[in-house]
Length: 68
Image 1 (cartoon, rainbow, N blue to C red):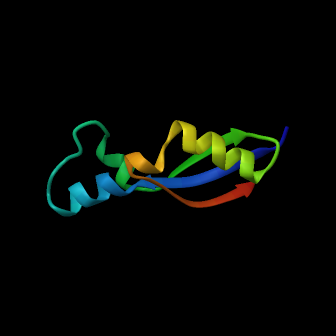
Image 2 (image 1 turned 180 degrees about the vertical axis):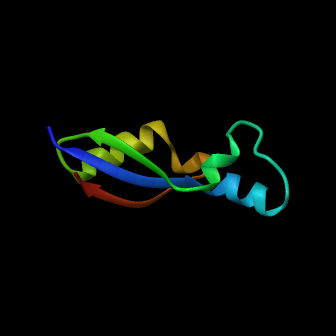
C-alpha cells in the first residue's frame, strides 16, 4: 500500500495566535504546517482518512498531498 505525505495546519489555531490568544484544545504548533504520513490505496483514500482524523469542521486545512 502506498504512503502519502499530507501537509496540513489548523486555521482556528492560526486565528487564535494572530489575535494573541491560544486555542482551547490544540497546541500552538498546529498553527504551523504538519507533515503527516498515511498509508492508503490512492490519494482520494488518503484524504478521506485524513478528514476522518483531522476534520475540516474542526479547522484543519490540507495544504498539499504527495505520494512518497
